[in-house]
Length: 111
Ligand SMILES: [Cu+2]
Image 1 (tube, rainbow, N blue to C red):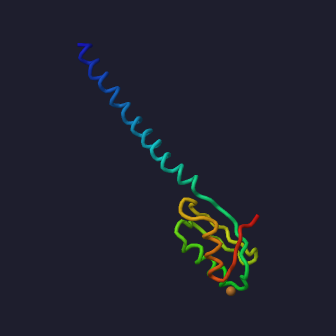
Image 2: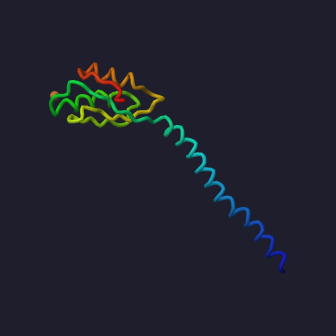
Image 3: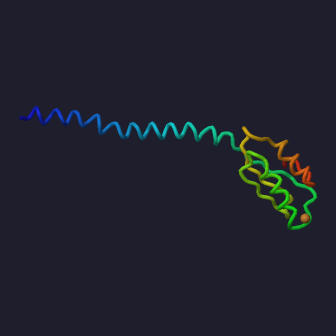
């Protein structure tokens, strides 16, 4: 009975191929979601005025991080800068600079 053994084998082949196909579909689907997220993320450096003591950077950081779409804000007292990573689909540089300005620390994009 060589034929009855061949039939289940030919049925098994497409089934074993289904798993990797599903996996690669998942990977493609995940990449399609991840790519727009990466494309929308932007990192900028702002020059920040008026920072004079160790608590000033904390206030600037708090002001920046309160904006929806800001992922991280690293504020340096010696450099008088803020390195901000944000989702540019949710916020923009003008919103970043006005939030630090409203907190008493005017800022502008570092060129
Ligand atoms: Cu201070």
